Image (cartoon, rainbow, N blue to C red; front, side, top):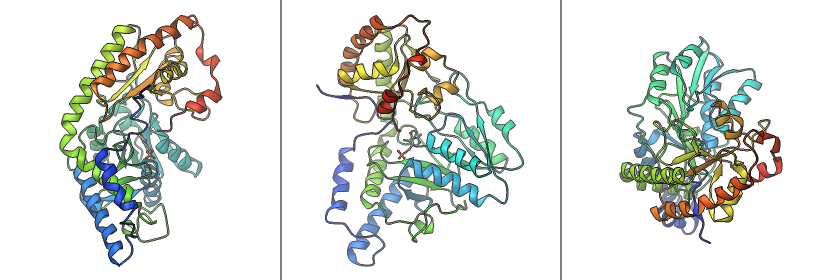
Amino acid sequence: MDCLYFDNNATTPLLPQVRDAIWPYFAEHFGNPASLHQPGRRARTAIETARAQVAALIGAEPEEIIFTAGGTESDNFALLGSLETLRPQGRHLITTSVEHLAVLDSCRYHERHGGSVSYLPVDASGQIDLAELEAAIRPDTVLISVMWANNETGVLFPIDAVAAVARRHGIRFHSDAVQALGKVPIDVRRTPVDLLSLSGHKIGAPKGIGALFVRRGTAICPYLHGGHQEGGLRAGTHHVAGIVGMGTACDWIRPRLCQENERQRALLRQLEDGIRAAVPEVVRNGDPHSCLPNTLNLSFPQIEGEGLLLGLDLVGIAASSGSACTSGSAGASHVLSAMGVPGARLHSSVRLSLGYQTSEAEVAALLQRLPAVVGRLQSLSLPADVDLSLFDCPVIECLLADHD
Ligand SMILES: *Cc1c(COP(=O)(O)O)cnc(C)c1O
């Protein structure tokens, strides 16, 4: 059976244009960009072209783009590099309780090393409250980190307003924009963000490549040591093919962003309406009025989310559980937990996420296959008052954990 891939927030297939563009950099153009000879110069030129392409998608200058090994490294670098640089001014950082683990675990690392962190709560729709952000600011606050869009629910945060608060208080502002890139417009000339994390494999480029936008004049300590690459800020021989792929993806997306946004938003509406027609009791998690065009996080009451995922996989639908296998959280999604989603709904969530390659025919095929799976599981399901968390199986959870 053909696989219907609805897990694009976890990773995306390579864009065909990217596949074609990167191959020569694994094959004949294998030079080390640090070398002075012709093969080296060729690789260096390709990197600078890609840097300009990535910069153009977010309105940055090419010198403000530092290539990294992905979104995780960019988040670690932005947070830990900033906190080290700003240590004389203070060691307090403000973030949200629904960030990606790349941010949350960097925060915990900072706390273990004597720093302090405030985690802003979110409301039932997954939104933060700007008044609570203002209230969390202390004299020793040196950094605010708020993601542009949430990877599990698709909720878009009020980034312009957060950036304005940070600016007004003279506090550095970082945003994890990995899920927002290529889906909604990002313009760092308009939004006063100082640091922005980006990743290649969420936008049709390979895994293992990412970038950090560092606004000109923003001092940051290097995170990797060992060479003079990337202006001395990120040591290590460049992943040339990955960089070319990320540049090519950004270049492909830039003229298509608005059109793709509308196309995916329309497909997502079809998907949601179709599922609601078949399963009226379904509940959408996350603010539907401020959301990525491609992400639908749904709870199917009285069905265990992971059972549903397995059932969907059996009929060729690749989706994701809303919950990642995070330590100490009994398998429940930290994002939905922070939103106060009640127990049964918490354990019955499934995320469907669209990509550039998702077609109307695939949405129609999903709508044909999904209701039978849901119906079968509902007929097997337990009474509504049983606490599904009692049935958590750590082994299955770890097998199914999505590491996006
Ligand atoms: C995927 C993701 C990351 C991690 O990026 P990698 O390139 O996989 O390391 C970070 N933040 C968010 C919001 C993500 O969705």
